[in-house]
Image (cartoon, rainbow over all chains, first blue to last red; front, side, top):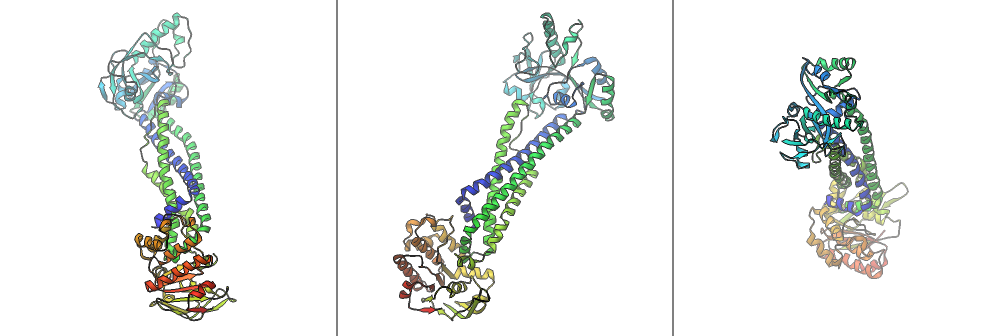
Length: 414
Length: 208
C-alpha cells in the first residue's frame, strides 16, 4: 500500500518526475556507455596484440605503425625492403615472424598479403575451403563473407590503396578459396592472400603506369623510385614478431632504428599510450556524468522538499489514521528510490541503444563492433549502488522531516 | 466510551488549559463548545492522542492512552479512533476510494474494498469513488472524511468543527451522518464546535 501511494505520488506530479528521471537516465546512460565502451574496446585491442611482441615497419609514427599493421585501421607508414627485413626475421631471437604486405582493398576491406601463419596466430579456423597457396587465391574473414556474400570460387577485382573508390586492378582477379569462422578479432574483416599476389598485382600495375608515364604518388608504395630500375625491388609493409628472447623487446627498437631505415615498436606500449590518451577523455566524460547525477539528486531533493509543504497535511492525515512515523519515512524514501531505480533502468536501456548505434557506425568505419547486451556486473553494480545512494541522500532530509512531523501543530495551523 | 480526569495542557507559560472532566458512553454524543482560544482543538487533539497532556488521564474503552508508547499510540489511534477534521485533507494523488481504503489498511492491515465502497455508497458518493478528492465539492469532501473516519469501525469518533465550512443544507447532512454511526456501531461521538446549528441538534453539551 505504501508502495502504491509512492507510485501514485510520483505519477501525480509528472513534471517533477520527468525532470528527475531525465537527469538520472542521462547520467546513468553516459556512465554505463563509457564503462561498456572502455571495457570492450580494451578487450578487443588487447586480443589483437596477443602474440605480437614487436612490429617492424618503415620509420614514422610508432602508433600509426601499430594501428595500421596490427589493427588494420590506419594507413601504413610506408614500405620496407624485403631483403633487409628478412635479415631480422631470420634472427635466432625470433620465434615467429609474419610478413604483411598491403596494397589493395575490396569494397573497403583490406587485402593483406601474408603467410598462413597469420591465420593460425589468431587461431582462426576454416568454415569452408583451405588456405591460399597460389597467387591471387584469397581467404576471407567471416564478416566479409557474409557482408559481401562471397562464396568459395567467387572472384573479384581489388581496388588500389585503402579507399573503396581507388583505381581498380583490371588485370587480375582474386579468387576465394577459403572462408574463416568468426574469431572476434581483426581477421574477421580481412581478405588474406600470399605476398606474391600483392607483388604480382603491382608489378604489372607499375609497368603500366610507367608506360603511360604517370607518376602517381601513393603513400602506400614508393614504387616510383624503383620503377626506373628494371629490377623490381620486392617490398613488404610490416612484420609481426613474436620473440623467443624477451631482451630483444628492449634492445631491438634502438638497434634497428640506428642501423636501418626501419623501426620496430612494441604494440603493447603503443596501445597503452593510446588508452592513456583515451583515459583523459573518458575521465572528463565520467566527471560530467557524475555531475549530472549530482544535479539529478538535487532535483529529486528539491521536488520532495517543495511538495513536503503541501503534503504535510497528507502525512498528518495518514498519521491520525494510524500510520507510524516509520511508515512516513519509508514513503518518502520509497518515492525517491523508485525514481532513481527507474532512472537507472532507463539509463541502462539507453546506453545499450546508444552502443548499438555506435557499434553500427564503428563497424562501417573502423571495423570494430561492440556487444550491446554485455553487462559489466562489477562496474554497473557499483553504478547501481551509487544511484541508490543518490536517491537515499536526496530523500534523507525530506524523509526525516516527514518522520518528525508534529501532527497536532500541523492540523491546528491548517 | 471515553473519560478524562483533571486534564491540563500548556503550550507555554501564558497559555495554560485546565479542562473540565468529560465522559461519553458508547452510543452517546457529546458536543464540546466554546469560543476561539478556549482550547477546543487542543482538547480534541488530546483526546485523539495527537498531543500528550501535561497531567491528568484519558481512558478510552479500557485503555489509558497516556501510558502507551508512541508506536502503540499510533496503532491504538488507527484501530479505535476516527477523526473528522475542520478542513478535509486527503492524499491528493489517490482516488476517493483509495483514500478510504488507505485508512482501513493503516488501521487493520486490510484494504477492505467492499466495506469502503459500501460506506461511500451510503454517503451518496457512489459515483465519485474513482475521482480525485480535489474534484469534489467541499460538502462531498467532508462526507469522504466521514467515510474515512468510519471505515474501520472506531470505538470513538472525534470531529473538529466538522460543519464550520459548510452551508446549512450540508451542515445538516453532516450532522446527521455523524450522529448515526454511534447509534449503529456502538461507538462514542465527541464533537468540538462553535457552530450554533449543531448546538440545536445535540443535547449533551459541555462548554469550555
